Length: 320
Image 1 (cartoon, rainbow, N blue to C red):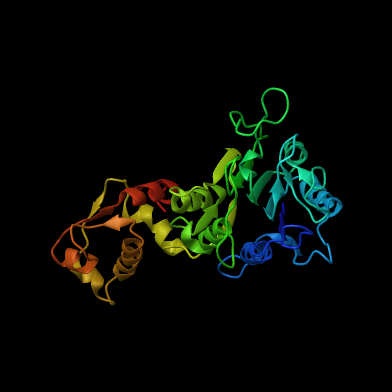
Image 2 (cartoon, rainbow, N blue to C red):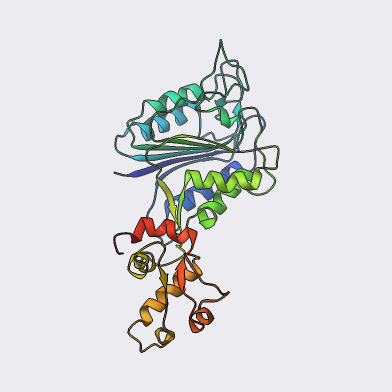
């Protein structure tokens, strides 16, 4: 199984050019291509169009790359787009460099058909454009009517993360768009869990929390039995510390009494103390004190925090 991504950013439109979309695509491609430790992550095809005079993302180009991305079985695939999306009588379209007239781009209905008929194992779609929240919804009644987003139609293991609702515009105020700026921060670790893992759902939560009080709000749609990890960031504790949860705490309610001698580097249990310091820094264990060492010296037991209980179920219930 491979992990392949198509990352598209278009500034160079013949009319209404943009300024941040190329930066958006470059930033996303750079982060998605490698994990925090430098290991390879997604294999990226990057299409960045800075100037209208030299088009590199026409409708034909985008459909060809999407067809290639979504045609391979057994792959995890990701599609990111930053650029214009325009309204048409038959629904929104991703605008390509052919122009900004209806029919010049790739319609959301066409994209949804490609997604729902793809043999890929999982599909993650991230759209940073106006009206992007309409992707994945069924248009009720006769023809396109903006604002009717009552039913989503997605095959299994598809997640769509959109910068706006179907009736809203995207926004940008700096080098990156507001939405992609939050995604970049999330992929760097802001949306990671204690293990350092970032998913589309955690990215959505990260972005939505920051944008919840604004006029533009992101939208998330999914039908997932499997939610792939988008990037691995620095974990809050070492793998050894996570695995030690089960040996240090045989049950989630265990209260561990640590002898002060464990703090001595020559003691046989000193390594366990070092693991506890990692778990305490990661807020996976807690004590009735502000700091771990004074709590141990006063005989206070160490116990799993509520978050620690969750990771105990993931790592520790079979004894580490």
